[in-house]
Length: 519
Image 1 (spheres, rainbow, N blue to C red):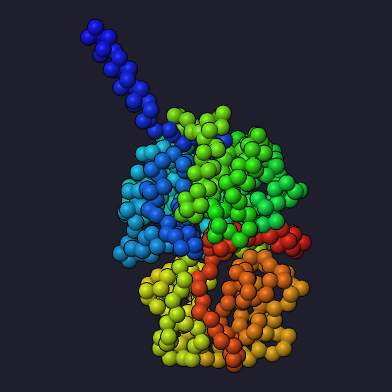
Image 2: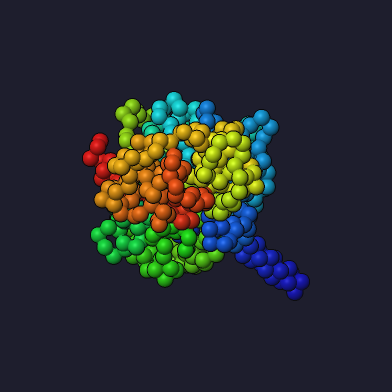
């Protein structure tokens, strides 16, 4: 009798262990839910993105892309985590974020995979040559993955791979970048992954070279802020099938998973926002594709607030194929070398990136000399990419999210020149400083400038017919010299962000076609 009791207790104990076992991430599953984290986009809707570990307490999210390494300076990565981390290593501009490192380990202990995302719309991360790509791979390996460095932002936490969110620049060197990392992955006992986040127009010009010549494990397509976004489902513009064809016929890895990317909810993008019901309708239609891999959302704070991440997990994790498995699976490609063309591809990719969407406070006086109509820089104010301030008689533009960085210290601020006399009086037809006046019939690509009502405006993505000052596609810059127009305070407006919060990724199809015509 005692023996039977012990046997029963052992069985119950074993069952308890099984029920509390942690499922490991499976890159080949068709049920993964991916969230970006790190840019606090939910602040645009009155929320606040929680600490990373907060989102790892249940089985909702399978993968986190930590955003972003937004810039490469002298071959070194520059990390931006909005308001989540502000301390840097002594003598370095690299963030030192031990709490994020602890959270990474917490999430990994619960079976989550976490990758560091490189890119975004506001940064500068071009890798023009194979040598540059290989060298930067060494930096990423030592800073975030299995290598070693005295300045590791997340301490001894070892991330599970790299995500490429390439939205601008010359990126041919990323083929060698991936190949160099793959060689290191092959000699490691740990499973690592390479992912990417192209926009839905095919091919995605910023990532095309890497996608077609390097090995990716997962590619999550941004089906928002484009003609082919989720709002086009049911029409010929919705092109998930085209990306699945790429996976099976063009991709080096024919088993690469293709994920459906959507905004996490209201405020996540300018178009393509879906309800839970609309999302599951689309998923029920595309889940039968051979390389379907799940859902990606921008971003964690927004997706948690809207409940869309939970809805996606509830749908995907209950599919017959199941969610993640208890055995992590990864396919390791052969470490062959691919020749890299030196021809540069022109691109007008302009889109979101670093975005804490904190409203910029408006100081009442300028710092130092000069007569500036732009609000003075304030050390307590959080500025997003594109924000313009005045300091010591000059105007400066923020290249990415920043708080407390004095404009004269360089990055992330760009000096636009002195307030007085820097911009000539506008003349009819030419605008100020040689910038043409806005024309409703003209198609403007991301980064294009136009003048309107005495101010220079910069397009954050492709636009036509959207009047500057009335639409978030345009960011208001400095006033033209001699203009009597009243300058409004500049709120940091990010297009993923990535202000994905107001615009997500916005590179429209026509912009792609214009590039192709010029090539």
